[in-house]
Image (cartoon, rainbow, N blue to C red; front, side, top):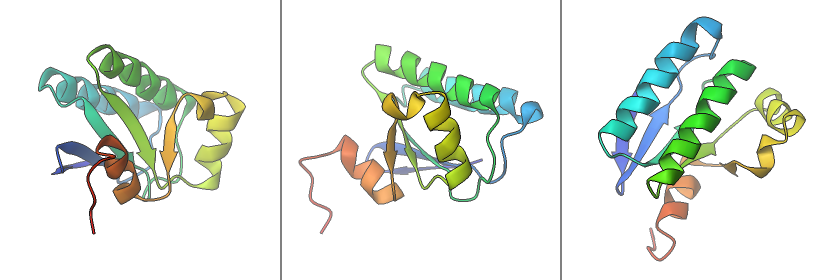
Length: 115
């Protein structure tokens, strides 16, 4: 995973599938961001073709923890398979999903114009 910051929002680029053996790494990454007070996070899934249900669970629980501190996790650039997983679990209603990273970052700063 690659981590960068844009307009006080941390963008985590998921660079491969999140399989069962990757869940702990995802959990540690998100927990570390929370410990570092990085509570506004965008997960960029453009390079991720698959996400296990356990991976989704870790992301959803991290989202809840960040919300307790006034933050959020938003998702960008997901494929059809991940969209279907979110719809099957009904988490598409609980997660904010964006077509681009820029839109997701902007959603944290609605008053800021990026033009």
